[in-house]
Image 1 (cartoon, rainbow, N blue to C red):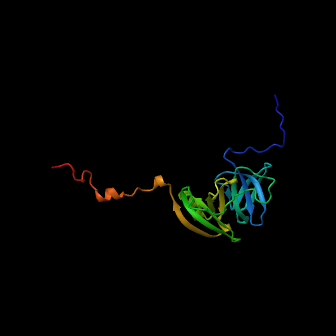
Image 2: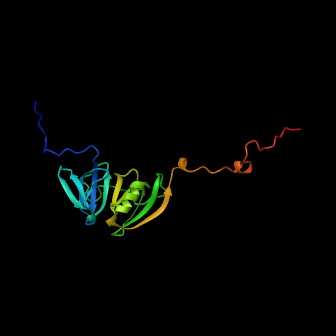
Image 3: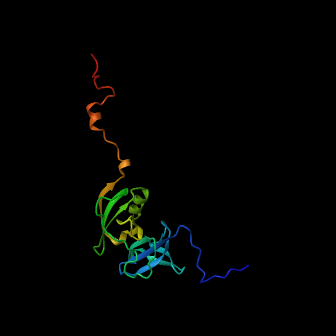
Length: 187
């Protein structure tokens, strides 16, 4: 039994590939699929476009790579719909709270994990992964090439309250030893 295809043959895509929107400094948008990591080969982004073609884009021409929920192909100005570019208050997630300045002087804040992947990205000068300030936006994650940035400021290290070391309470400082409180009913 043969099954007819409703369109052109599309190369097999790994299940780990995610929807992305690539924005260049010339405001050229490219939609496609990328894996969460390992998409750079010799300073080229290996992108599978929405029509199934594999294309290479020089990393130094890109401003950002947005991992998105929906492509929004009809929106030619802001398909990423990042929303806020800065946190209104202290971020709720865990990680390094960063403020980044792009080559075109645009500012963006976000959270980056502080782990070995972060250190590797700094050492290899490829770029940074960032969680944008607006969790309700279409963009879930960003990759910012190192060549697109002129300044990176660390605004803070944010941890969840449950992960912070507990401080001794005032009562335990007054009576540090258990049973140190005098018995009030002794004769």
